[in-house]
Amino acid sequence: MTTEDALAWVERTVGPARVVGELLGGWTSTMLALETAAGEGLVLRLMTREPWRTHGAALTTRESEVQRMLADTPVAAPRSVALDADGSSCGHPAHLMTRLPGSVHTDRPSAADLRSMVAVLVGIHEVVPTIEVRTYQSWAFEAKYVVPPWSTDDGLWEAAFDLLRTPPPAYEPTFLHRDFQPRNLLWSGGRVSGVVDWVETSTGPAWLDVAHAASNLAVAHDAEVAETFAQEYAGRTGRERQPYLEVMDLVGFLPPPGRPGFLTLPQEHAGAEAWLRLALGRL
Image 1 (cartoon, helix red, strand yellow):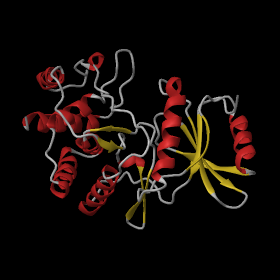
Image 2: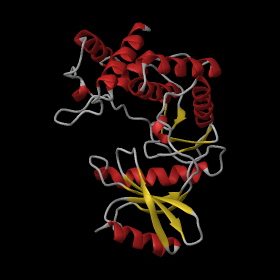
Image 3: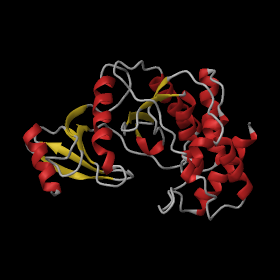
């Protein structure tokens, strides 16, 4: 099946629609910005990339269910419109949703930006799920415990792997976005206008969302930005920092054997090691 098949499904669902463009930055899916004849903005997720496509039915179903639940909360998330979870109509697992205003910012965030991010994350963590939400899964599984070839301190990574071979800390279950990071935030008028990409939503320790955002900030910018974000969240919520989870999240960026790595630039490597060093130093 082709994109034309997917668009035919969209038109059977909402009427005539045209492709405005492709949204960039996602790792798992082809994301098409659409506009209906009435001028309504929509987004079509086509889960085209492996290994996510293999699990696409569960991922798109989760996103649809979570978005429907969030419609009754203050969280600025897209609203689910239609679902082709098995891809029988579109050729790939597909989810049609509303398009939120705003755009992704990749520039170094200011202190005010970081405070805005924290405020949004606090709001997500205040959600009490009214549907069943799965328990989080660690992305730092044993097969990834291989020192990366770009390492400048192999002992640092070995210490991280040794830590993760011990049990994680106990936690109070909290509603998590699970992929909260700058690429999944939309900005408009100097504020966060929306949070997208709800396929990994879980319950788990609140600090895991903080850790994931901090890891992304460290590799995209530097450990100082990551530290400012984490401190802002801790100061606002009073939650205790969890360096174990910071280590776990950062190690999750390493590739499984035989797969290309997510971190490819020297700046990303330096940021990852600097953040890992800080996290281990807090234990």
